[in-house]
Length: 200
Image (cartoon, rainbow, N blue to C red; front, side, top):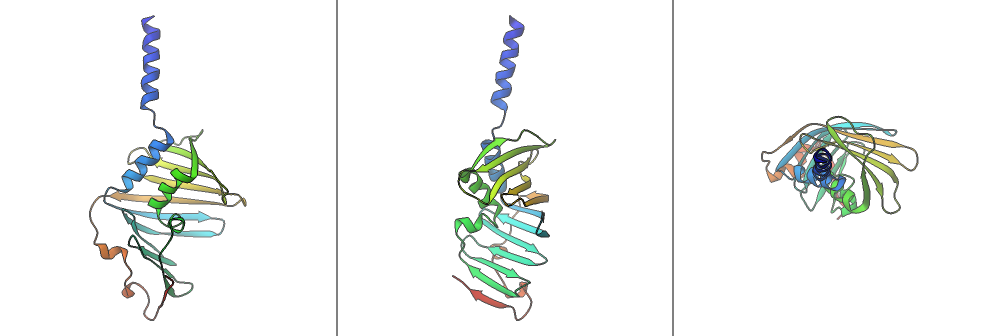
């Protein structure tokens, strides 16, 4: 009888200690809010590959790649495209930010997706499977959160048109401080003569 009681208590303890997908996503958002977060990123998709670096602080971010540069100071977004050789200035909506800002995307996942602990887990990570609550181009999404840092390591998007996209973050570092100017556009950061278009 004592052995059975011990087993039951052990199961209850494990269940209480287990993290739900929502709790893990909350931890990932909390980890991103700890001062400045810097990381390298790579995106692989059927439409091509891209890589670069990202710096975040709260709802501000800066994204740099060989073809694209983006700055967001919490209100205004500046986006430089090498293809068009211009900088567009916009005031992005919440939906716009979910496509560019990992912080906004993570918070949007909680609101707009149902989530479960994925059937297949990868060692060292907590994997969440998400499916949209309403009509969306996304069929299914997998988030891989590091057990050690609670930071997002990888996101795999499976689209309804059969294509997929995988975002991988590496060399993540948290803490430290950055000047507010890091998240605003400066003409010296793009080639001389680049046209600046204000779309606000």
